[in-house]
Length: 231
Image (cartoon, rainbow, N blue to C red):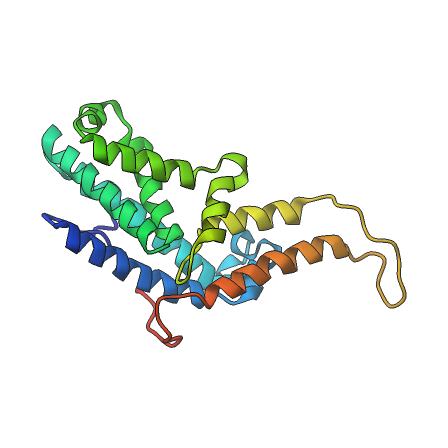
């Protein structure tokens, strides 16, 4: 259920910041472990994805555990007041993750907060009890993490962020999926170039994957042999 990843209990703000940093360290190891070949030709969604993209799938599954952990944190709370407190803690975790430029982790928490499980009618009263400071934090980060305009605000935040940082990997997978399905015209034949190779498409692939590779070097630690989080 992800509770082994997210367990805030009666955590104060300091504990929430520590959890945000710990999550970021774990996700950094996962992100750095992904070889560029796993981003090519939709390897992560292919029939043999377990063979072609094991590291990328490990990160995707870890993200799912974090999202479920946040949902569990809120849903296990008994009563409106307790659930409101749990929602506030989740929003503070979201804020802490944004504070350390872990956009991937922030999106995991946002996915939980916007999920059907936490937006059900039974939780409306809990959301209504949130202090205005928590609501404002949530709204600000929701605007930054929005998928609107092809993640326009998130791309701007990523470009402006100083390392260390972890990007939202799902944004790149969306880009690469679009590139793979594009019908961009083939370039004119040139000496030494196969006219049937879509060079424009491969240029876009190279540009996106090159950015991913550069971002993989902007982590929180220098230990590239750190142990991967268990699944």
